[in-house]
Length: 325
Image (cartoon, rainbow, N blue to C red; front, side):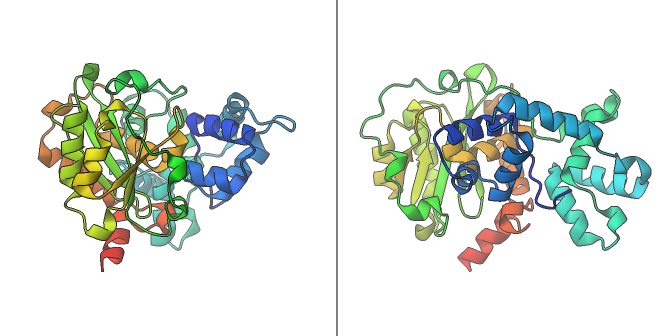
């Protein structure tokens, strides 16, 4: 099993399909989806149908491979304990795999992310399976339209397109560029703001009084103003109407706002992936008006202390600390 394995979702595979149709290179697709180029290259080679790549076919082929893998966890109670302990901390299988390789020289205590996923999905139904799968990010086979869940859409005045962003934002060479979004709560009556820094993957959770444009602008501005000056250069947002007051936001914070293309979540891949992590703690149906600020801080800390492959298994907190020092 390749040590560079990265588990792609069905949503990722849809993104690959459309980006290939736009004749984008493997490296460009990897950058858009926030994964390594080798992951994209391997995905296309393994799962294409003839000379073409289709997301449904790719998903079926991947699931078949899962069931052919040997279940290493069945034969080692020590390894099983190590994996389950980390799962209960909401670590992903990829983070668990990397952690075990760093902690144990004994190769019998090493396991690939794919083998962990396989073991969990083929467990017999019961409380253990339900509990362990509950610690994973929710797996969706179909992306819902998000426009209906955000504040009313419509033309956003004077928006600046993502295609006008400086090249330094694209290649992540300079920190201080963020991606923002809302996570919608129960019955669309509440929301949580999220901001993710593109270089360090540092996450900020932003409690909201309401999800109208004025409330969102005030809440985001309040958090951004606390950042060091060199860490608030730009924010990339989707076309949600809740960011209609972006000009006023920029005046208050000096942070320029760029808007992604319609229905192009991969252009904000860092934020999209992070929102999936946040849903582990605040699942669909959460009423964010009932969540305390201490709960938000706790989840924010857990997210920023997780080791990340893209950071050479440092945590966002460690990466940000290095930059600030």
